[in-house]
Length: 398
Ligand code: AMP
Image (cartoon, rainbow, N blue to C red; front, side, top):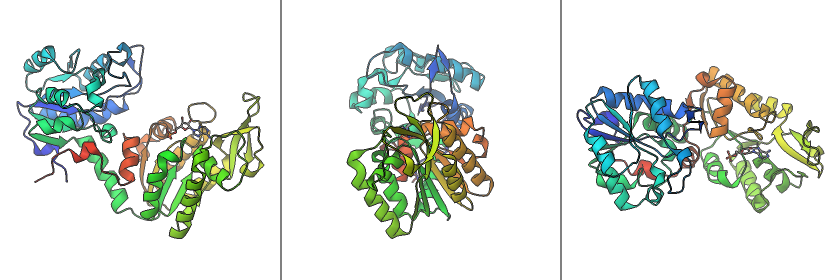
């Protein structure tokens, strides 16, 4: 068990909280504040305990340079509205000016630092930079589960230079739910995976098979690599030609382990020469060379939904089609409804990954899902059984 923020005495302490405020910003406004809301319990707890709260996050990929569109300033304003109290903003995350702002904090005050990734040292996990961050605080709390699979200065390096490194409440919640799924899932256990590439998900698929998932439902472009491996024509659909053998191997392993592997039986396709006017739903085996598969079909939605009936544990990561292009979001949104139904019928349902979570919101079923994970890559790595560096670096409970 990792040390929790609840194990720390925060009164009058400078509390550095690594949060995940990597949110979409348009015209200086936060477009989706799910991640900010996710960190509120930890921030509010630190405020109530009389901590002097210092928040730090990355935003986008500024690659070590100051890039205005990746400034966290709009987040300070938004957070201040959510908390109903002022949030001070520092133009940098290290240096004299930041120190002065930290020194001026009173118990219960909140300061948000500028984007950590404006310094290339952050992603390099540079010791000197980590030490500078550490010098700002008395205790360190990591609440950024979504960044815990990266060994960066603010997630790993800093822990070497602070006395106490603890998990925040969101981090703890993520670890609790996801550990339960990998150590002791209630059966029937159904996993739904989608998205672009098999290669990103090989480790998690193998781990799920080892952990005796009962059914593995695969949609999205990933499915085409499996179809091509079996000799089907997939037309111009996205395939990883160097992963055909991997797909065969996964199929073999699933069969040996008695895992039911379900692939789409129909899909929505367009003609690659007339993509705007040629959308139709056809059986997979009718795919000819000129077609591109962009979403699962209605029969597949029904089969996948049926496979979820009676499930006690469900995990879902990755869209069933090109979710960002309407109407190819339909299959993914239909699956969002199906997993919400499974949750209503008693399953523990965990959803992770940007597109799947967006589909849950779009379908209006977010409040029916047991746990919406804030991690994409971190969730997959954790489910694959890897130790996340940002978690490993935290102190254990003594
Ligand atoms: P991932 O990052 O692996 O979760 O994959 C997400 C991406 O997969 C999204 O950008 C989707 O557009 C893409 N995707 C899903 N299904 C398909 C498909 N049939 N063809 C092309 N891209 C797809």
